[in-house]
Image (tube, rainbow, N blue to C red; front, top):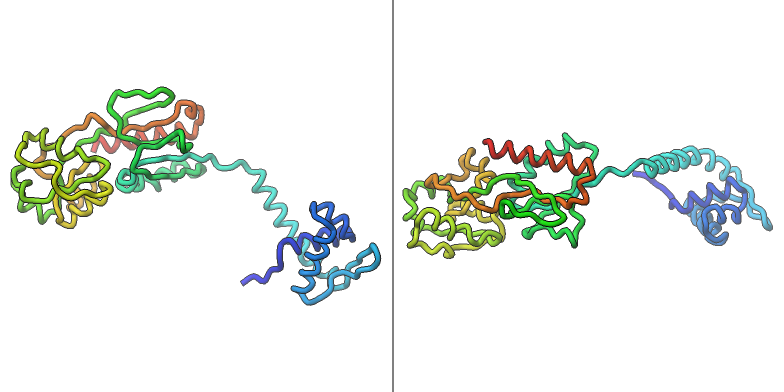
Length: 297
């Protein structure tokens, strides 16, 4: 445990000892002579020993003061030099990314260590939001959003990251009871609030007309709905690139083999006025390359 007096007291003492003047110390520190006097008095009270002899308009160091100065001055100089060096160093380039919570948990976070390994000198910050990034309110550099394929937006560069293919998934135990799409009438459909049309659209795609695609339980996010499916509560709608690992490890089972390809893929969005930042462009290209790898699995 360190026993340290106040930094202000040490600064006042060092300056006053160097100048042998409270007034000159005050001028250097941009405070009043009274403030210097009070800081030094507080330091003396803390140490229990006088550091200065005080005479009319003149101060001198006591023997204890001279010894104390000789012991602390080198350390104060090292702290000052280290602080100046850090202040002079250029700040690490900051890159801010905004994605959906489920996308972060299931796709980006598993790649986060690799991202930092490739870009160790960048300060990459991640924000999650159930809504698409608001570039007017927040100064994000990159956002991954679900946008209609082919759409363009003035002032933004948009590139497709990965297709969105949806299909029903459930726990291995529940899957044993579901042999055909008609069996979905006997189970609970699990919905995620950000994608309320997934079930109706998949049922229409599969040609099923006698099941209410809006019935069932609603959850705040896809990740919660998928965890409910793993617990056997019902059948959720999965997105292939986000549940690939769960299917491989047997936590979820893909039902029927019928996938619906959405016209709204995951896309990488960046304000065009920030594409002059080489570091940002490098991170953006890395993300896009990871999307290619995911699509090839």
